[in-house]
Structure formats: C-alpha cells, structure tokens
Image (cartoon, rainbow, N blue to C red; front, side, top):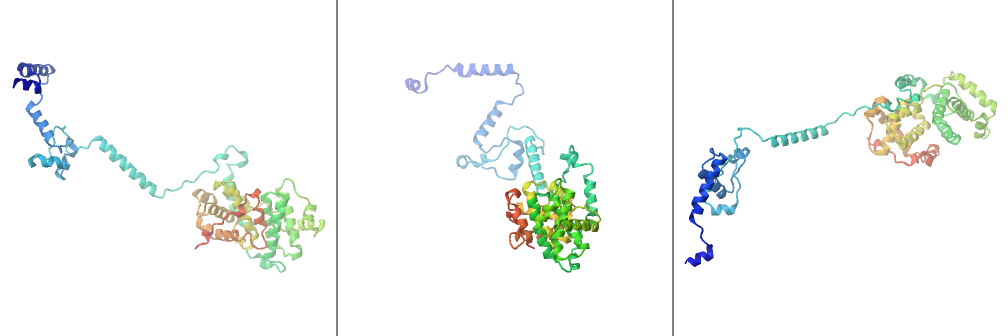
Length: 402
C-alpha cells in the first residue's frame, strides 16, 4: 500500500509544509503589503467559482441594462451540464458607473458616424457652383487690360445692336437673294483661308457686307465686287500685312478693274460713315472661351460652328454675343456629349442655358449637314490638320430632342 502511493503520487511531503509554512508566509506577505481592506477570501473564491460555472457572465457595466431586455446567449453544451439555477445572468466585480454614462470610445464613434452622415447629406444636396475670376492670371499682362476689361465688354454689349442688321433686309433687294449671299460668303471664307488672314478680318468682312446691303441695293453682277471690297477694307483695319488691290482682282479672275474696286471702296465707306469699330461675334468669342476655360479642341470646334452661321442668312436674327455664347455651348455639348454650361460662363456671357437652346439647336442642324450640299467651304477648311479636323467631330444631336 505504501509502495503504491509512492509510485503513483510520489513521495509524501511533510504536513507542516502544506499547512503551517504556506499559511504563515501568506499572512505575513499580506501584512507587509498593507492590504487590510481586501475582501474575504471566501468571497473571492465564491466569485471565482461562479465565474467558472457561469460562461455567460458579463463584466461590462454599460451592458448591464441590456440583460433585462434580452437573454444572453450561452453555450448549449454547458447548459446540459449545469443546473438551471446557475444559468442566470450576473454582473460581477465591475466599477461603479453612473446610470446613463457612456464610455468615451462609444461617444467618439457615435460622433464620427454622425459626421459621416452629415457629409453624405451635404454631398446629396445641390451645392451652388462658385463663379471663377477669369482675369486673375492676367493681372501682370498689360495687354489684357484687366482693370478695364469688364467695362469694355459692358460697352460692347450696349452697342452690339447698333452694329446688327435687320433679319429681313434682303426683301428690299430686287436682284439678289439670301442664297446668293450664302454663295458669296462661302467663297470669301475660302479666300480668307488662302490669304491666311486673321479671324477678326473674316467676321468684320461679313459685318460690312450685311450693313452695306441693308442700305444699298446691288445688282447680282456687282455682288462679288461688294464682297472683295469689304474684305479689302477689313484687311486695312485688322491686318498688319494687307493684300493689294491687284491680289483681290486676281482672286476674282479679273472680273473687275482696279478703278471699280476703289470706287466701291469709297461708296462703302461713305455709306457706313467710316464706322468700322463694331463688336463682331469674334470679339465675344475670345472672352467667352476664356470663361469656359477652353482648350484648343474646344476653341476650334466653336469657331467651326460660328463660321457655319456666317453663311446662314437666318442667323442674322441673333445678336453677336448670343451667337458666340451658343457656339461655345454647342461645342461643349459636342465634345462631352452632355449639356454643360457653368455658372462662370453664365456670369460672363449674361446668358442662361435656356436662352441659348434655340440658337444652339440651329447650329447643331448646320453642323449635321455641313459636309453635304454645294456650300462646303467651312467644312473643307475645318477638315484639315491645321484646324484639328474639327468638322469631323460628332454634333450633339441630343440637343435636337424636344
């Protein structure tokens, strides 16, 4: 019997080591630590035993309120082994919290979630787009005249109607009609391209022709003479290097003599009272393209659409500023294939998107049929590499849908 105990349990230790020595050393250690206010060991043992037999015990004070509203889940295996009275939910050994106190990390999390919800609501709302100051980058450029540019364009807006013509002035002509006018201007666009003249020259040429024809009746044999003379005057006003009279005579295949050109020049200048400083669509195009923050592609497409309108007699009913704004709007819609008109563009053009729709739809129809028919001068000009093949871009046909 003694041997079996020794084999299975090892040598027996003296009882004094288990009872007397251990207990005395423990009591001495507790006195040295000064732990006089600790709970009785029996209570601690009871807590330990309860924690062992109760796997569902919760040790967080902020969850104590939830125990009354729902049953705490527990392990099914322990439920079968333990008596039912030991499965109650008990909160043990926790710090004292106020009844409605919330841990700090919970408050921070809730605040963060509230901020995320607020930001999502702001993003869903329509935030008003700010108006950009398009002249800030040119404050050090004296040629940009930043101090006066707003006043200059305000003046252009006031006088632009005085430079316009009646949209039905052709009814007063007995020998020419609007189709002849279209043929003349389409031809002059090719002449302008061959002479490599400035864009301002072309727009001023068309303006001089219309203003002169509104005041003077012309026979069809003299209509081409009116056209080349108007371009000669526009070149003298805009160009640095001006083509000679002989150049224009050659371009007409010597249909007119030098004296005829000079005589028509005098008649035209007297009829127009030497008023050549007028705001053409080109003047507004430059300002409005800057407001649209355009690149070269948008610029070329806008001018392509604008030159298509020069040929069309029916576009005389629109003011130069409206034509320029609508051309840029149509070009933007064509490039991006959706409607786009920023608050900045609206501010500097003084035209809303709704005011441009009628004119823009007509421009889209011109763009759609630009390569067809007999008058294809503008289309061929903008189908070259120099003009970025702008004529080959798709028109925004969705604008034609009502």
